Image: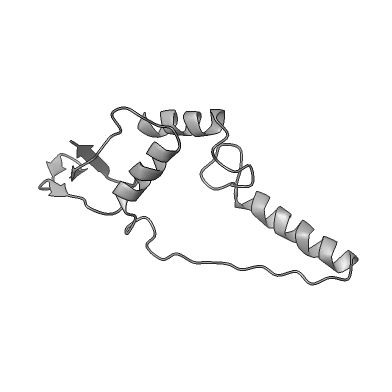
Length: 118
């Protein structure tokens, strides 16, 4: 629910750049590959150089600073009670892990249920 509302707000207020494809409905990495191919072809036609830089951010979601994200959301105009997920626990089947404090990282969907609460 939080993600759906956040995406709606960011899309409605044109806060996300139009060239971002990842994690957006109706867009995919294929869109970026087509943009790159077009960029290279255009440079080739105009006898120019084309330069591309790629970054692989290993464990990016595991090391995300959540308070930095909240600061960015505040700067983007999101005010009020932003969710501060302080404790998380995992449910696999009918068993629950012990609640743990999550200082960094972003909760992700997986084959188990991740419950976060204030």
